[in-house]
Length: 126
Image (cartoon, rainbow, N blue to C red; front, side):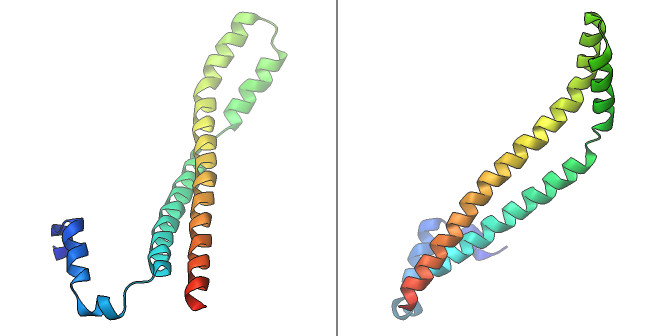
């Protein structure tokens, strides 16, 4: 087991600050932001892949077929029956669409983090 896994946050901070290298070469904010961005980018990638795989399982052809029948049927009871049959397909589609929207929002946050990294890097260079 890695010794860092056994240490508390406070212990790790105290240990790092006690090192001579920290005094002469403290970590830069851009390095921290880069690490954060890499972690968040990895999580974003994993969510995208999972959502794409989920999307591949969606078979909306049956739902579309039921919707066509729904449009041509006049009987209310038959329409209700078709709506009940369509519900599971609609539910899966809504899950997929909500996750897609959540991924887009998360991507905006990740992009803002990268922009912060670039700003800090440019400040440190000048």
